[in-house]
Length: 433
Image 1 (cartoon, rainbow, N blue to C red):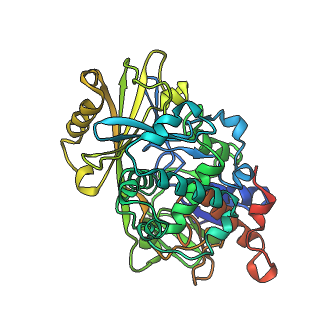
Image 2 (image 1 turned 45 degrees about the vertical axis):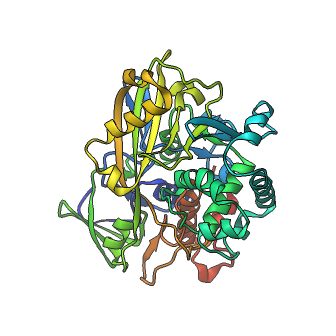
Image 3 (image 1 turned 135 degrees about the horizontal axis):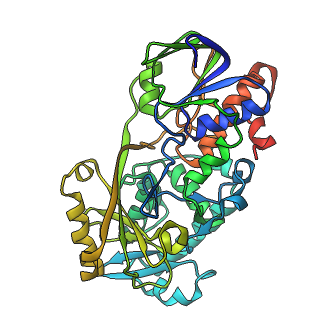
């Protein structure tokens, strides 16, 4: 890239929001360049290939329950495989399955008898998910909100059920165990599980990124380009060069955004660690439910077996195990692997000694905190700075569809500024397949 070269649009960040913005601009014949500080696209959605295993950067899933997901992704090309509809909860020294009886009727006895809340809690959960499955997603973000813990109590859920089910389940999505995140976030997550599946692409989560980059002209993404600051119509890079554009789109994670455009106060982050192990051992389960720590004791929040869901995640005859740990203090511990192995041995026995550690990801900014008040992802983010557009988490929510939608809406604002149109979500409604 030549110093001081001019484009119609410069996009800072090649995460999903930035790539979605770029794809929409390209389809409308608007020139652009994407500046990415790392050596590959995707932001937090990346997949490493290690000894024949596919390791996503942190345990991630593709939710098919997003109402507009088909506008942005070709799901057939991704070859997705779904997790079973339910969870396996570690409680009082045993594993207990709570499953959707419509899909897993043979687990009905466990679902009813598990020492996880009461029968009344199960009835309340079914009633809530049925209500949310019928509510338009957009309405969730215009309704009242409160902390999730307060919402669950107001719905009559028992302390046992909140602690053993909702705490690890919601923490797996929002990465914080205090149930302080917005009740709107809980509602939309529960709606996703009620109307779709949590799935894995055959070639890892990075396959989603490749769908976007394959639709862009060659050479439009410039890697290892760190932006140091932004001024009117210009982006300045760490190597001393600059690039000019009529419009600059900032599509980076919130900590970087706060530094580049001087948002105050800076956002608070939540982190996670994901430890991957390989083994020839097979779990003592026939259905690869996500495993939740219902005892809320020890470093583990949840465990998944991606290769039992999508066999392409591991070589033949091997099992891939993904262990998720939450909490800044625990994530930073040097003996984290030993802590995790110790709890896994308690759960699965002596076979854990043969698990081989493949890689650990310690992600300090995995998500922004999602405490109330939250913004509706259906409304485009705005900054009162001429020529500057933001997309992604800022004034939206973290999540795959929200990132894609945010990027498309940012492009839409450039293509047809709001003063000349009535619907800021037109790019989303047109679709970006």
